[in-house]
Length: 346
Image (cartoon, rainbow, N blue to C red; front, side, top):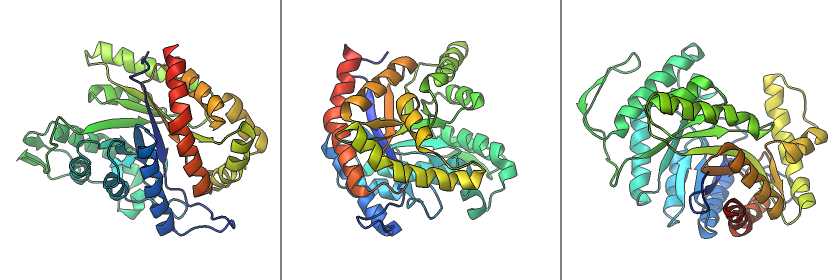
């Protein structure tokens, strides 16, 4: 169980395209500028980490998280900066390493990369990859990336790359190694793979009772023991929103939450979501929405139940306005985080 000092509390965003005060959708460039301001505020209020997701569609503004993170790095001093996630399957592992080692240099050692397959597949046709190669691409590219993390001369060969022979990739990380995680959505194979490569794991829990993911935590520990691998940090990523009161938080979040779920649900063959489903997720599921007291208690319960050492709240949600997200970030850093640490220390 992480103690009061060990628990890391962060934020994630996908750069969802939001509405202005008149309900009109903002341009993607304006959303990107707003996101940088959100990252700066997160640094100012003491938040440990901000993760920026990668998408290639019109309802999310961020297609190049590393560029956004570099901009935030130039205006901050302490917050750690990472992806949430980098879709490694449709990217070049060497370029991913170079981009994030560059951010690490710019930020004086604050860069992290979370590697995953992503829950969307639009990057595959965009960059000329076949979905039939989904598993092979991730497996081989992760193997190459893991070799690069060692920062020595790399000799590697696979089917996706001509191969490397005693090659050093620059820039090297100045102090230690680049911090890399594997993002897992619920695949036992991905859990074991994280252990094999000695990478910390973060669980994307976006619905239902978070306790059901305890099986993946237990599998991670069991695999680490059997393979004689070191114990490494485990994290959770879940959506949420904070306002002064529970009612205000739910009222603010619901329109954007519904817009996002209904759009994605329409693409994937789900029916539209309902206010009853929304309230059930807020009451008993993996939606951390409410007053600072409500959200802090729920985060602490999840951390205790799963035994994780980091919790990242996805504070963006569909068309939820920038002004509401800024207030949520402020309350998360100034009120929720101290409460969570006190609850875990008690």
